[in-house]
Structures are given as C-alpha cells and as structure tokens.
Image (cartoon, rainbow, N blue to C red; front, side):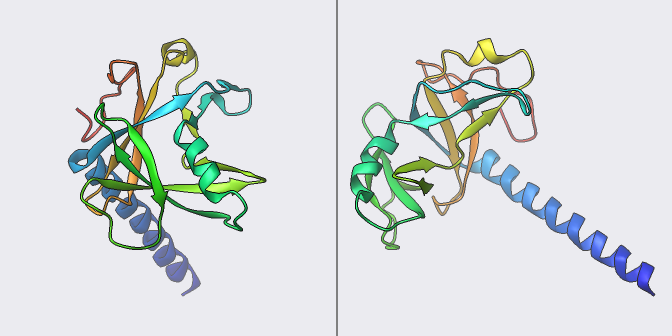
Length: 169
C-alpha cells in the first residue's frame, strides 16, 4: 500500500511540474513582448557556470517611489514609451491594469529594489555574445502579470543568440 501511495504522489508531482511548463510555453508562444533597459552588471559565477546578473534602469525610479516605505516585495507597473522600452509608471495598488500597462515583480533587499528575475543563465563560453546586451525581453500572458524572461536583446532589439525551443520563433 505504501508503495502505491508513493507512486501516486510521484505521478502527481510530475504532472504538476509539467502543467507549469506547458503554461509557461503557452505564454511564450502567445504572449506580448516588452523590453526593459539593462544597466551594466556582473557577468560571471564559478559555481553556476556562466550567467549575467541583471540590473534594470526601471529600478532607479522604483527606488525613489518606495523610499521610506516598509515594502519587502510587490509589483512595479511599467508602460512602453514611444521607443517600445518599458518605463516605470507607479507601484501596483491592485487596481485593474490599463491596456498598455504591465506588472513586474520586485523584491527589496536592504534599501534597494531588485526586479525578478535578476539573473540570466547561458551556456559555458557564450558570455562574449551577451556583453552588448542592452535590453531584457519579457513575454507577458493575457493578464499582463504573468511573464517569462525570453532572453536578452541588443541595441536594435534583436534577440542575442536565440535558441530553437518549443514556441520560440
């Protein structure tokens, strides 16, 4: 009996994980892309392989908005400017988002907010390809609150070293 129970839980866990993956793949295939401008950041980790720690220009405006408030995490509302680059608009007050607004999750460590995700992993030896990254490309689902980091883009907003993966064109 115990073995059947363990097998049942194992199947349930694998099923839930696969459901999450399918949901993210659907966001990637059908979602809306926005660009967040990057700041220069640290490009290396010996334990994790190659990765780039991401810093966003939006964090500067967000910092002044939460200064002096006891906020540990939340959502920053951004909106694309005329160049298609997302700019900070306001903190999320849980009201309905306008058609051109998107929510980006942040956490606050010490006095500084950090957008999530704050790192981008890439294959060993491909670090040079990402040195000229200017934007992070986020793809949003229909609710404009659920998003996936699609990759990094250059100054012309072209994806750097895109991978052929399900739903990624």
